[in-house]
Amino acid sequence: MIKTKKYIREQLAPLYPPMEVEGLIRIILEQVTGFSPLQMHLNQTEPLPESKIMQITEIVNRLCKSEPIQYILGETEFYGLKFNVSPGVLIPRAETEELVDWIVKEEAGCKSLLDIGTGSGCIPISIAKNTSMERIEGWDISEEALTIARANANRNDARVQFSNQDIFNPTGIDEHKEWEVIVSNPPYVLKEESALMEKNVLDFEPHLALFVPDEDPLLFYRVIAKFAKVHLPPHGKLYFEINERMGEQTSALLRELGFYEILTRKDLQGKVRMIRGRKAEIGQS
Ligand code: GLN
Image: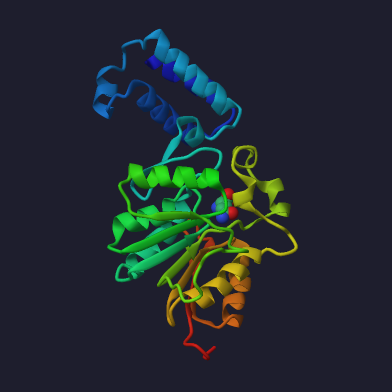
């Protein structure tokens, strides 16, 4: 195993920072050997069988082409739970865990929630597992994402109803239907920002979930907030993950649409990454 570790380290060193390389070595060996950390330690000096070395070589080759480890392994961890991921959905991010945590702490007493643009389903599933909400729904326009989201709900034994909906044209939704909380992590990366993005994101993650046109960065926020004005009860809450450059503009948009108690929050990296607002009483703005 020592030789294998050295091989992985040498291959990945030109591409990934040293700390990340060590993390990848641990993840790859855990996955391929199935060993616990103790077994790993006890077997350190044992060579690995040829079949395992072949599996490792294949993973390393894919990593060398910048493919994200989460897609190679087909899964990732989010908010303490395991989620299947494939290139049809974004890889759940640490900052989205912070958004989930905000909702879990503030909205545990609520009964219903809708996540718009759910992708892997990581938001509604982790909320379902950590609150006693009775009706949780996730919408996505991508059938491929919904297949993964449903598999994730099964895998985590979570009760979430997933449906195919296009937020620009939702169908079959009664105008009186309400959710106490609406949340979304919509596409918010500008095309002009793609020059700064890592190859592993740009070449592998779904552009449908990432990008918004440069000329209208708040496109999704506007349509979702307008939907929320109709489908939240008075004082119901709307939560978003946002582009760190758009905090003020998103606050202004929510204010214009009559939301109140608008709060932004920074993520652990100090970037303005989340926003929340409450729907005013009818007629009040
Ligand atoms: N946080 C993601 C990224 O920076 C973007 C997620 C999104 O567009 N909603 O890659």
